Image (tube, rainbow, N blue to C red; front, side, top):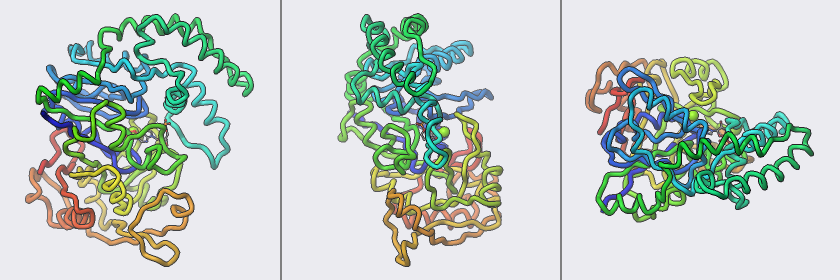
Length: 422
Ligand code: IMO
Ligand code: MG
């Protein structure tokens, strides 16, 4: 029996999970998405061409590797089909795709609801969602009125759409928002269901069969721990469980089936959207990091807020997820600064603490306590940890020391091959 290795984000997303996933996916027999939807974005460069995936699991690029979209994912069929068409046009077979019959479908009224709710929030209360309908789709799932993939391809679709649209339109009307048309939605979505039908199956049993056959499996996380609906900085979070628990609920695999848990971070940090961010550098330093690291959203193109790496938050992610190995990206970027900082503790009302809390008052009150490091180093063509510049090693060693977790992957540049594996 094999186990499933997992790649997760440790901060607010955009840690460069795709780089590690891309490396591990080429070695895996099965790659799985378990939560979130097309609010995620990761870019893979293959044969000089860039692919920006929001829904398709990375394994789809490797012939013979199963690419599974698990039951915990919310699927916008228009977006998924667009991604598949790009791949097909470039000569990729997509026969290795499998979609859970239990995954929820993002409908046009979810996207409208997302936009309406965000528009109604007062300036200080805005979440800064990706406006992809993620939150409202998960709301329907928990309200037990979601349209699942099995509905989209089956004969329950029309009735469910009409019922949902009737209810949503009452809300839209009361809020002066444009109503949606059930019949137009049915006419547009039924062909999408027909397109996807042959990929839809019971992925829960499929994944267990794969484990039994000792196939190597990789779960590619989307979003990140501090965006988790339970463990993140609520309400400035996404509506799913991007931390380790979401792997079990989003695939049907059990806790016993989990192998390595890789936590991805950057040598600095970033956040897109609203919400507290203790080590944010809302100043020239943050601007410099943004430009050096090209910190603009893959999904929404928004400029990302940037700051120093926060080990208090990282250790929280290590605890919550049981992280067994760290993947640190943008080591080359931090080396371009003459000096840089690492947050090792917080000052909370005059007391030093290393316990993280997402409590709003705590977040507001805490002041970061930093250690400083020397930058101005170049990675050059270092292919191993040993070949890294001394100053870079000092930084990585300190992170290992304060987390107790080994650094297994080091991102040394934007290119696919610029990754040191330890
Ligand atoms: P990847 O997988 C960064 C953020 C949004 C917003 C909040 C809620 O690329 O790391 P949502 O549309 O999910 O309801 O928005 O969550 N967010 C992300 N930020 N990377 C992501 O994914 C994100 N997915 C959601 O910016 O603040
Ligand atoms: Mg992103």
